[in-house]
Image (tube, rainbow, N blue to C red):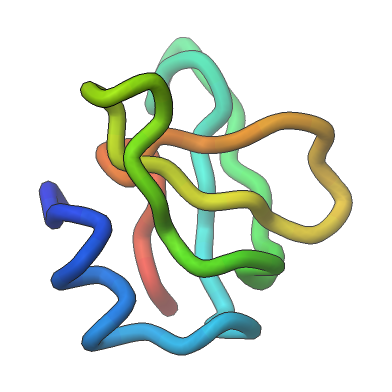
Length: 67
């Protein structure tokens, strides 16, 4: 799913259950089931991202699927 931070925030509140893919998506990456812990934002002016529980760092919205 490829959404802007503004559209993500309009659709999904903080605490939304998500599956995230740090780094790369499967089959070469791993999936983590978690929840968002922040509103989405634009990181350094070009990457729409969100913070999630139990993961250090942000995740690009292109690597986040709401459940």
